[in-house]
Image 1 (spheres, one colour):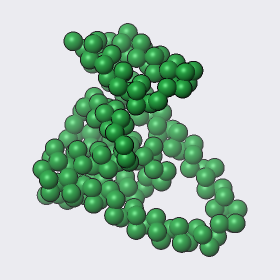
Image 2 (cartoon, helix red, strand yellow; image 1 turned 120 degrees about the vertical axis):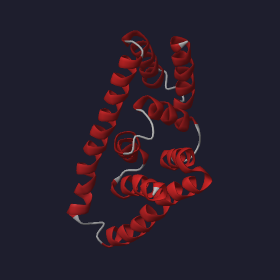
Image 3 (cartoon, one colour; image 1 turned 60 degrees about the vertical axis):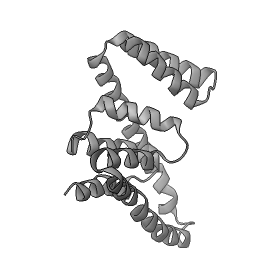
Length: 176
């Protein structure tokens, strides 16, 4: 039964998560944390932060980690397959349809509606991560790390992987 749950937990976000990792991360979080309770929000946010430092798509890294954690090597394979194969097939079908109608106003307007939805999903995930961090630690480290990340990313244009690694070190310092 665990293999079916793993497949569904990654198949559904992959199928409805139009927009890549930014759209699928909150959907996977809902399945992994809320629906199946395989990990807490804090564990998910740490896994996500670490996964973002590694190259490659974030959804496959999450699928591999969660699948392996829940059901070993075969679980990782099932979760990875559910993440990659069905959306790839759907993308192939949809792209062939969209290419036929690429000059259509409806297709051009599709981006106008999708981008705000992805932004709202990411904002919701960020608020959930911040509120969990504040509850589990205190508000001061969360604010310090958040301000540090914002300034280094927006003002100084640091590489996000470096900011994430420094944030992990700061988080470890505050938690110890």
